[in-house]
Amino acid sequence: MSSPPARARVAKEVAEVIATRRVGAYQHLTLVSPEIAELARPGQFVALAVGDESSATLLRRSFSIHKVSPSGTYGGTVEIVVSAVGPGTRWIVARAPHDLVDVVGPLGKAFPVPTEPVPCVLVGGGYGSAPLFWLASQLRERGCHVEMVLGAASEDRLFGVVEARRSCDGVTVTTDDGSAGHRGWVSDVLPDLIDRTGAGVVYGCGPMGMLRSITDIAGRHGAVAQVAVEEAMACGVGVCMTCVMPVVGADGQTRMVRSCVEGPVFRGDRVRWDAFDGNHARVPDDAVGAPRTGGH
Amino acid sequence: MADQQSDKHTDDRIDLSVDLGYGKVLPNPLMTASGCAANGAELHRFFDVSQLGAFVTKSVMADPRSGRGTPRMAETPSGMLNSIGLQGPGIAAFVDTDLPWLASVGARVLPSIAGSSSTEFAHVAATLRASRAFAAVVGVEVNISCPNVANRGLVFACDPGASAKVIALVREQLPRDVPIFAKLSPDVTDITSIAAACVKAGADGLTMINTLLGMVIDTDLMRPHLGGITGGLSGPAIRPVAVRAIWQVRQAMAEGRIPVVPIIGVGGVRTGRDALELVAAGASAVQVGTATFNDPTAPVRVLHELTDLLVEKGYQRFSDVVGAAHGSPLPPRPVPVDERSRA
Ligand SMILES: Cc1cc2nc3c(=O)[nH]c(=O)nc-3n(C[C@H](O)[C@H](O)[C@H](O)COP(=O)(O)OP(=O)(O)OC[C@H]3O[C@@H](n4cnc5c(N)ncnc54)[C@H](O)[C@@H]3O)c2cc1C
Ligand SMILES: Cc1cc2nc3c(=O)[nH]c(=O)nc-3n(C[C@H](O)[C@H](O)[C@H](O)COP(=O)(O)O)c2cc1C
Ligand code: FES
Image (cartoon, rainbow over all chains, first blue to last red; front, side, top):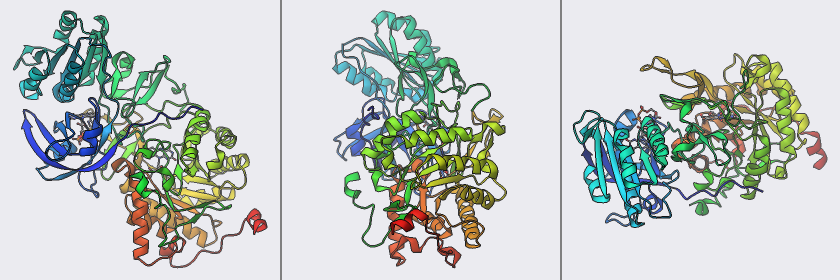
């Protein structure tokens, strides 16, 4: 008998906001959430409820875990970096110290870390850099040489440049408008960086278009890409099937897999980028159980 | 957390038991809603799924299905639209993996089955019956709110004839002591006529309601937001529709237009008070769906809230509240032949 995979522990906590501060275009929140702080690993995320138990906004909002401190002064804390883009994130960034938020986590799969001390490049687009500093420290503890590339549209949308300098062996910054670092995209600087460091793994977190180009470049320069994706999620815990993406499995077959439990981190070359168009993903014709003509 | 609560699925202050018929008695009336709880393992991380009266699984069809492209959801006021397209592993994988797992943790299971033809429904039911974990099955929910390929994709539940055919075929495949519940769509002119057709064809109960068809347009792109264009509306926004549908069908039972069978209420339940509303309208059990996305512990939380509320109101038996808002009791339920012989 095959049985469903054992699933990692997860907690639901009412967390007090103990600090919130503006960082460029983002809001950095620190939440007292001891159980989640204890369990989490880099690449995992938390899902925050918007409003109270009678809120008309039912669906939780997901955020990468930026940092955890399992034994802080206030008990374990979890930090997130939020970009206010709509009503849900606007409500979250408006929380004041001592307000309570309902948090579920840690969710999803963490970034896999290499067993050998291979050089790594970490690429963050906008707030996508949030989970990478914590990953960088873990990689360096294992003896990996770690370089980071931070890219954004403009300087205020970069996150963590100072922290990157502290936690990595080298940092490259790019902005679309040239307001900081190199003018251009992360994809302009990545090929040379992989070649120069001899990187074996490229980790990426940011917009889907960026993850796709990281995957292409890593593949052409002999590195494996591990990317953390963002798909619209209704539950975040694996029960609704809304967050699916076409991904090739170990058996070579494409399936629509849940990015909240089987992701958000995927090996870049396993994602069927050919099926994406803007925020739409088609079901590839060769996917397991794909609709036959006239069916479904 | 699950451990502390594991003894609370029954309560010594009140008799919460629910009789689904044929000797299938549940310890309490709370269930998950199909498609809102996957097949148990995910929610078992938040609470012990055997605490629920029954666990309703995602509708399963004959073969593996990829479902639709994305986006598959759009958030709406107090609810959401979904367009999943019945993604699933197929009945063979379900009976091989999911059902045995649910049985292993002691859950009482109400599998939901679906098909794009009446023969597919029958095949799925037959495969389910042959499962070595079939003893965990307390009933089968027949999701007739899905498209009938033979009738240009019109959902079975919109056509009394097509609904009756599916129910009759599924009934034939399953042992007599396993009750089957027809899950109805509210998107019909007269839900009582569909309910009557299903019960006459052999349904032992009804589940009401499935989602309502809706649509959202992305005004930036000036295109439909969902990959599947239309989607099913669920969540607290639809609760009044569920209450109305349950009320009408229960009323038709009181008037003798539909034989008396248990109703499982579903639609917009988020709190114990919401559940009580469906029960007072005529539901003998209650499912929690979309609210689980907001609070993964919602099905057990609602159970505890409902229990406290009933105790507070002085009830000693859950069954006394079923249909209470109608004022008058239902005509007695005819005792099925095999139950009479047992007595
Ligand atoms: C795994 C994961 C990690 C994320 N990490 C971060 C982070 O660290 N910092 C950050 O600022 N944002 C992050 N996001 C994106 C964030 O969840 C969305 O910006 C947020 O849900 C938008 O909600 P809203 O109400 O403000 O916007 P609206 O656009 O009004 O949201 C409408 C609906 O669409 C969904 N939605 C919209 N955009 C997204 C999106 N990009 N991803 C997922 N769902 C979306 C919402 O959940 C909501 O249900 C992450 C998303 C995922 C899936
Ligand atoms: C994401 C999602 C998937 C669903 N999938 C199914 C399904 O497979 N079979 C089914 O009978 N109903 C399905 N439903 C409908 C629910 O079971 C329920 O009838 C409906 O959502 C109303 O209840 P609620 O408001 O509590 O969610 C689904 C609903 C949602 C939101
Ligand atoms: S968000 Fe519900 S299954 Fe992934």
